[in-house]
Length: 441
Image (cartoon, rainbow, N blue to C red; front, side):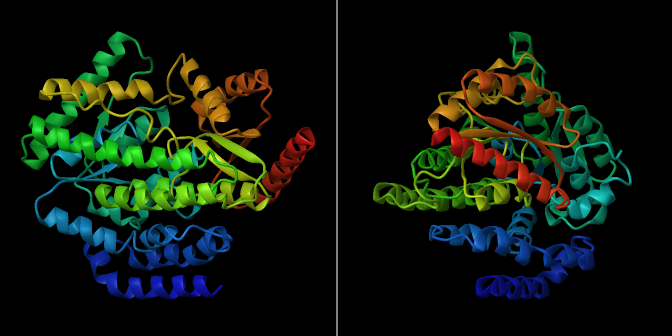
């Protein structure tokens, strides 16, 4: 409670200090204050009450506290220096090219029930809450990243997003990349052409020529962050797991917002600590606690509901097969390209290693889930879909059959960003964990 009060006081101080900056960005400061006011209580309950948290989480706690303040100030300083600020919403966006231009690639807000009603003013209600929250943040003018960007890079991973980019383009320039739905040679050629188009657009909008040296630096920076996230994932294989799933999720969510070099450095420092904890047998949960793999839709900041329910029920989440999990760092971009053409081809080829539910056929994703379950020694898998997320909801049946074929227990859940179904989810999760415990006995 004392730490939560400190967080609350810290946010109040931050609000007072940065109100003028937010107003200059055209934000609705009063609504933004109302949005931030709920953070200390939620963060305290989900994160700060955990026993035996790694000391290195202090950086990420502070990063969350200052995400809308100090980090935004840093981004605006980059913008004043003439560097482009580009908003992204998917792991397929070629952030390497933004970094190559000396720019800032920043994720967009989109994981809160607070802005869903505003999103429904221009979107249908039977659309996933991720998209409705995203649009709501822009319409309500309470996401400073949305207000700071020069343009957005969208992608056609689902029909909902495809049409949403048209709406958002009315408020901020939005480039849309046509993501192929298959992974044949012709699809690879299409995606490579899209990467080349984005390269030309970044050059045009930034005034920077992306030569081989610049692109190499962008690739190295993005790869280094992926490698650090993969290192974090590897530490979670231990029993006891040295870090909770809640903390690991928070880290990955914040990866979309932080300075990449600083984030990579701090995460590697945390991993040093986690590896020592593994060697000592120290864990965030007791040895032998039920180990759960989460699979399904991404969980944008600040959506922590599922992880909180699972881990307060006595289990530990040891991996996420999601875009805010292993799909974020799936596959490095090859660094052997010596010419711009070779580098762009290498950036494009990474899309074949990220197995989203938007692809058909998609047997590679089934392979990923089974592999992750084995690597993490998961006792069970929770397949989670946001409501109205058709690709992941429909693919859940195939994932479930594949897991059951390997004798791995699976629980399929569907929810939104509200807390209304928390009791029902808690009951189902506890019953699932009791079933796992009975099988292990």
